[in-house]
Image (cartoon, rainbow, N blue to C red; front, side, top):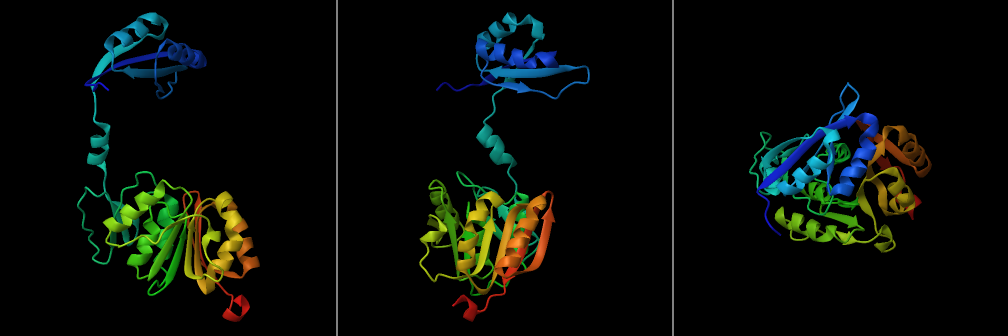
Amino acid sequence: MQKIDTWYKAEGYCPAEEFEIASYLLFEAGVATLEELDPKEDGRTEFCFYTGDKAERDRIVNEFPQYHFAVSEEPAKDWDKWWRDRAQPVSVSPHLWVRPPWVEFTPDDPKAVVLELEAKTAFGTGEHDTTSSCATLMESIDFNGKTVLDIGTGTGILAMYARRLGAKLAVGTEIDPLTIPCIAENFERNGFKESDCILGFLDAFKDGAKFDVILCNMIRSELWPLRDDIEDLLAAGGELIISGQLLTEKNYILKWFEEAGFKVKLERESGEWWSVLAQSTMSEQTNA
């Protein structure tokens, strides 16, 4: 593939009500991507397109004089380098930072945990409110010597944080095979010999498997079918963090907790999202 050194830009406009047909005509003429710009108060819609071929741009511009195109040129960017140069450490929670592998960073807080993380094909580098809330609630748990299950671990960020907070075992689950190499690389990059993460559903665990802490950062439609498995896998007196829930849906979770014998310890709201730390009130005898 020939490297593009210059992008040839055309920026035009039309009445707002004609933008749909204009888009159709321009795509038919060979425009690959049409960017709609901010709407104007005068009732017109502005748009632009780019191409690496000056002759192609000029042909399209000449074909549609009704769109009043203005032409210009821009040097082509190395978008990967542009993104990497602007990547910065992320403050995920009061005591957790995530930095890209190519960025050196030392936080002011000597007790802070810094994870080196690159998302690649997996979701979750810490920026999202739901990840931040889950990590913040984790800081209210004593993880020393405990076993942890991170359902839908993504990049493994929460499982690694649990290990750094003292957990003796942090097992992550994922159903997307593309995430597994990324997770393994992230754990190795952060000084863990192996990830202890598995590919599969919760029924992959043997009968009787129990975890002291369960983390689940996923939307309610994904969480809801897992309720029975979560109840079975959580040890008596164990702690459960649920994140990724909309504020408008939190009553579904609270009703489940009431029915399953979970006591709410902490709640956290961030934007439209709600997260909760709860504890099982079941005894060993009841579990048995």
